[in-house]
Amino acid sequence: MPAKAALEAQLVDRARDLGPVLAERARQAELDRRVSRETDRDFREAGFYRALQPARYGGMELDYGAQTAFARELGRSCASSAWVGGIIACHGWVAGMFPDSAQAEIWGDDADVAVATSFLPVGVTAERNGRDLHISGRWRFSSGVDLCGWAILLVMLPAAGGNGPPDPVFAMVDLADCKVEDAWNSAGLSASGSNDIVVEGAVIPPHRAIRVRDLRGDATPGSEAHDSYLYRLPLFAVFPFNIIGPALGAARGALDAVIGDLTGRQSVTGTDLSRVATVHQRLGKASALLDAADAVIAQLRAEIVAKGKSGGTFEMSDRGRYRLNLGHVAQSCCDAVDELLPLTGGRGLETSHPMQRAWRDVHAVSQHIGLVWDLQTGLYGNILLGHGSPDPKL
Image (cartoon, rainbow, N blue to C red; front, side, top):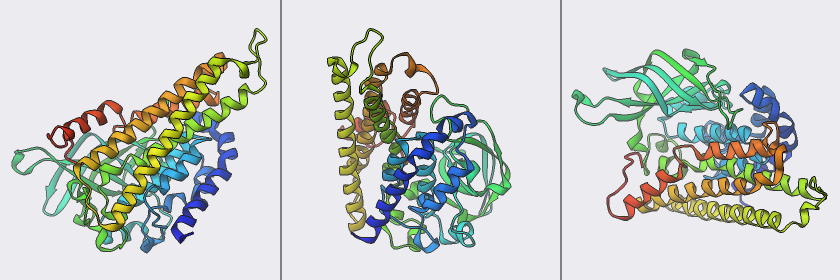
């Protein structure tokens, strides 16, 4: 087995081994609205955060999709924990696209420094002052930010002279210079600690800011320092791989839990539920949906990795198709847990019940803008009919 494949297999095995303890911690994590420091320590020791981090700075630099594989396994026990593990891993990939001098600031003294992101600016002001960028405002939904030392923020920089659409820029900030506000209260992914970052008058030097339009494939500022294809991938075309793993895992964990719960359990009327035809049908539908979803993920991942390694071109039709099919995978996970929830009866409505948590978490994942089904179908329809992508970041 090639070295990278072996390392990925080790991460998946470590995720599987952590399953029981994550299941035990899941309820308290929801109440705390963040994963515990013990879980963060376990993830660091396992190496999850460094899966896509450049090898030059102590990362594993594994093939794209490794983060999906171990997050899927973590998600079988706790989707919020899986979300944090997978999303922080992907931030090491995004940071690897920044200039080498910025990466040295993050990891030069400590390869274990984790990076957060926020792509949702609220009330943000941004302006150029010479070569520097001055920013202030609030950025929402920064998952796992309490565990991180740096953050990548999406800044909509006004066009020069005020004419034309804003230019989206990623700005790297030291979280020691920011305020993290405890603002996360959500029905799903409740323990992801997706809090707000507040910035007051930060000065971003040129090496810590990159145009999002320069991350649509081919060379990036970071690829000059690293040989791996990872840092030349079209970021927003393949980004949903970073967030779909927890949904796949949570839905699969729900299926396993329901099967275990139904084995030998009787209804209030004394009926053996494991022999009821409609129960069989729901289990069969959920199984087929999740098997098909796994197959789509494997196929798309293999294509992206092969094309990345060979230096192939990611046509707009490819980019739209990745988004379309990953959105469909998210929809399939929702359909699967919707099939399963009625089999748990009234107990499955309790917020502490694993099935209820899985149902909420899967639907929460599907609400991410990179997976919302209506958006992905509309995007692909535009491309198919020759109108191009309505999303300039793609």
